[in-house]
Length: 172
Image (cartoon, rainbow, N blue to C red; front, side, top):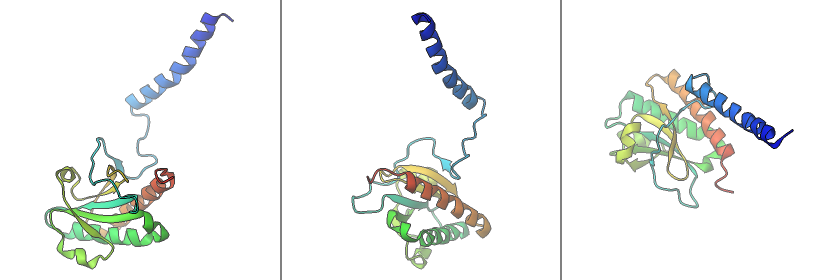
């Protein structure tokens, strides 16, 4: 086999899978949400400052609207239940509510703490967001006033959060 023929076969073997991947993405043959339940953010949003060394690496954030209605109450309840249901994994999670001012009903939920809303949070209003150690928002989940819908959303958040925590290598 000549070197020219070998090089041609090598290029063919390298380029065919790349072209197949590009075509499958271009025509939508690849399902983007097959693994994750939430919606990946299309652009980088630094929602929070970097986590301190001795603080939890992951933040579960609810970006509250200006006035806390029924869907806001349901989201706060879901966040409390989610955090409680994590058991020993709670040590790696910090649940936060980001709002212009602390919601009146926040005192009912002892595990949630309040943080002041910044301008970047506007695009994520009324959504639950998973934020990593660097303060980057990764996945978002829309909030619903229906308790049954919120149970399904809580399951999705829990699944994605546990998967992210298992694959996290930033602490090692």
